[in-house]
Amino acid sequence: MVTAMDPVDNLEAEHQAHVRSWLVSTDDVFRRVKPAEPPEHLVSYVVPVDPATGDVLLVDHVNARLWLPPGGHVEVGEHPAVTAAREISEELGIDDATVGEPLFLTVTRTVGVDAGHTDVSLWFVLALNSARSLRPDQGEFAAVRWWTRAELESADRSRFDPHLFRFLGKLRRPGF
Image 1 (cartoon, rainbow, N blue to C red):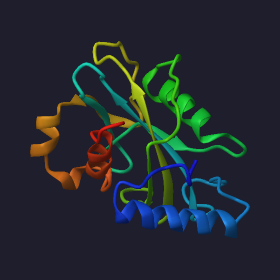
Image 2 (cartoon, helix red, strand yellow):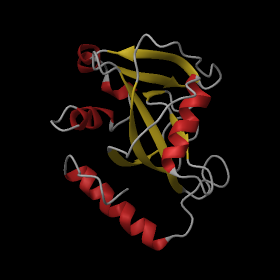
Image 3 (spheres, rainbow, N blue to C red):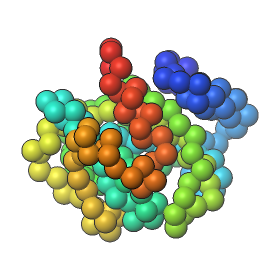
Image 4 (tube, one colour):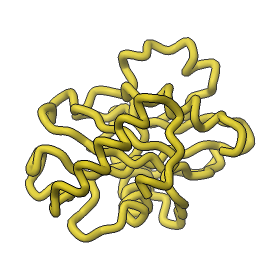
């Protein structure tokens, strides 16, 4: 999955090279003990996008204190696409989600309550109608909402995942 992604920019290419090197150097890519053991581990993000409007669903994550895509840590032995489907079910109550291959790859030092480890994140896209009923995990999120392109363009970027706007740029490229 890592090598199949076409990097959108030099930073994603650097992250891709880092992850390839990391994968060769370790036999343990899964978080074993919360929050940070081992200190670098796999995460699957799922970015719900309304195909009719291009609106994006994000969650105000209590621990990170940022607007993020839903998602979470890949369990031991779990495929990242299975993680994506599991997380969207657990966090939003969507039990029929199907994701394809990840679109984006990031390596991020965490912030917030669980700061101090590195997430290697695979970003999956989920086509989802914004009128769909959701059952958000009230313990994990302060809020859940759909964002229009205009709202995101005028938003305070410090309150979002540091790579979100690069992801959105890649999502809007022809062929994606």
